[in-house]
Length: 282
Image 1 (cartoon, rainbow, N blue to C red):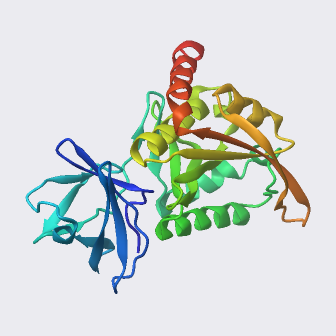
Image 2 (image 1 turned 30 degrees about the vertical axis):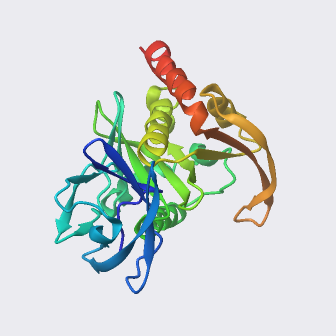
Image 3 (image 1 turned 135 degrees about the horizontal axis):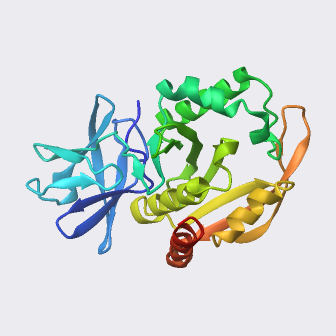
C-alpha cells in the first residue's frame, strides 16, 4: 500500500495551507498531526481504502464544504461525509529539457540497459558489474516507493522521450522535515548537458516548495571529485566527511562527503540554478 509520499503533506483550501504528516497506515487509534500556521491539532484516521488514508475533518474543526487538493500531485482530495481522502498519485515534474516521471516497474528494462554502462559506476561507492545488480537497485527503489520512504524518478529527455537516467528523493524524515537527494545515475551521453542541473533544480523545488522540507542532504563518495564539484557549483554547503559511511559489495568501507541545502538558502540556490540553466546551456 502506498500514498502520496509527502513530508509533511500540504493541503490547500482557499488561501490557507495545511500540513499533514502521515505517521502510520494503521487505522486503529492512530492520529496524524495536522499543522497550519496558527497552531497544530490532531485528526484521527478513520479508515484505509484502496491504498488511501482517510482522515476525519470534523475532529479537526475543518469545513467539509472546503475544496482540498494535494500540493504534491495536485489531485483533488475527496470529501466523504466529513472525511478527507489523500490521493496516492505523484505528479511528474516538468522542466525545459527534462521531465521527471515517478519510477514504475515498466521502466525496468530500459533503465537496466542504461545503468549497465560501467562508466556510470566508476567513481561511486557501489560496484555494479551486472544487469542483475542493476535490477536489484531498481527493485529496491520501487519497494521503498511503495513504503513511502523514497520518491524515485526516471529522467526523460523531453526532446526525444528517451530515458536519460534516474534520481530520487530518499531517506525522507517525516518528523524532522529533511531528506536526501541521491542515487542520481545518468547515461554518459547526457553528461555535461542540462540534464543533471535541471534534475537537481526540479527535485529541490519539489522538496522545499511542495514537500515543506527544511533541509536536503547530498552524500558523495570521497573520491568522486566530479560530483563534488557539481554539487558545490549549485550552492550546496560542504559539512564534512562521513568516515566509513558505506561498505562496498566487496566489503570495503568508504568515506562520503556530506553536503546540504537548508530552506533559508533555497532562494539563492534556486536563482543560481536558473542562471546556470539560462546562461550555460542557452
